[in-house]
Image (tube, rainbow, N blue to C red):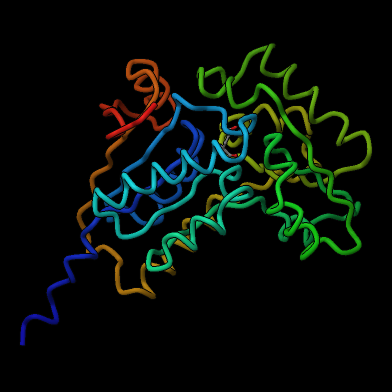
Length: 276
Ligand code: DGL
């Protein structure tokens, strides 16, 4: 029988990855690096960013709309590359799609607690993530004996959306949120928003070499690999999978910023059937 050598058709389907905007590209880059054979569809909901300041019901409705489009596109799995969506809505999304592998990023509180020597950890995140039930659950589950200080970082997402990754104004905005955490002794900083890895050089410059900065994106890519293998859905390879970009934002602006963050020119398309 030769049929055992033919990968199931479902394994050749794409993986959907989405965020409020271009931040989730920090996760997409890790997935591309660890799972190059996977076909990927990335949704940047830049027309509705930032999620971090929107009412939770609005964020959940956007996430549901995007999941519906990714399902219609035949995605075999989805990655929520947005801590804000995870913190506010992940349970509801999983309940609505119980038959679908949904891998979701969340702030790396557990590894941070294992690494801190001062016993003080800062979590840099959006306002919605800071106030979310998801972050409260993570802290309750993993941070016994350690002070975890969630810090909202207004304006950082908008900077990354504009491609302003460095310069005096970006450094001042970063210092304003990071310095108070350093002043109280935080020695580990968690990047609790997928836009922030693109500010990492500035964050590390402000924080100095003795502070550990944690990005959970590599762990998300590993978890996706594990889930796909478990379900028999890993792409057969070895040819690299294609990557498509969809957006609800301005096409020219999204194209410019994705090229900057992704490192090569892309042709984003309009997010299908967007009601907004
Ligand atoms: N990048 C997202 C996150 O991880 C959302 C940022 C936003 O739109 O406010 O939280």
